Length: 307
Ligand SMILES: Nc1ncnc2c1ncn2[C@@H]1O[C@H](COP(=O)(O)OP(=O)(O)O)[C@@H](O)[C@H]1O
Ligand SMILES: [Mg+2]
Image 1 (cartoon, helix red, strand yellow):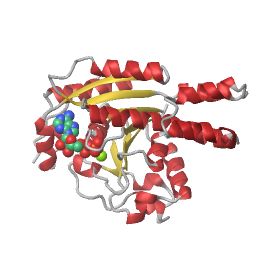
Image 2: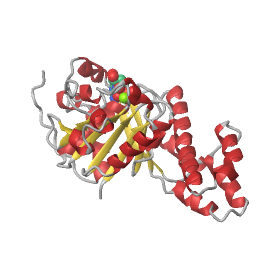
Image 3: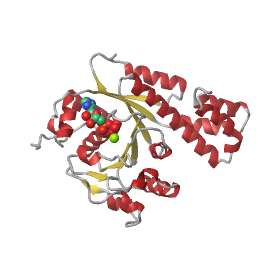
């Protein structure tokens, strides 16, 4: 079965792109056919994390109809089995896609013929980012242990639920009935999407349960990146517990990824960190994560002399 992972979270700089690129490489090393889709529209940089120059073709060719197939712009990388759909060369308008363009991209991503599709998202909670995140069969939220990042991640998670609910209510032609209640939720007057669902069920709207099932069916995991010694080892578990208590019990903690200053150095030198420093705690954390995603043993990383 095809798996689509979205890698998101409210805060910029938390390591979404680094994790997307690293997991992409590790899954490809397991022999899976993987495509990374750079959806940080207007600020794409996955190619750099893969040690590559700006790709010659990308998402723009699909959007401007130079090609009708998104697969056409999935370019091979230096890593066997790993492909990249870049949005680097897209024009200024790309960051503000028209609704129809967004739907076209979403449908095409859902139909990409790869075993693993990894979506690297931008920061913030704009509709494009939320809608791209909701393509996923499993959403991965990346936070760092700082309170600011955790706060942003909670806002992002709440926005994802809210967006999903809003789209479903619109589709069911029930949006007008609930608009007022949803507005309360967006303004913070209601604590969680669960409160809204309770209102729907309480009003005996027959679809109340349908919406409840819809939201509780979303599969989410949390990753804590840039993890350092002074942080409580079980912080991730604690955060997931809060999510499961206040939202839906569908959260999992995928693990900590250790901080290593050489990540920064590798990016500066355009090296691939996991290739250059395969025997670090950070790489072992990433390998554990890749293993958890596929349920398979990770092959040892080949040490290749990189520049
Ligand atoms: N595990 C890590 N250890 C040390 N530095 C990291 C780690 N992960 C990411 N970084 C640093 O954080 C920066 C931002 O990462 P990036 O993946 O671009 O964030 P995002 O995509 O969330 O904006 C990177 O350039 C890198 O220097
Ligand atoms: Mg990024």
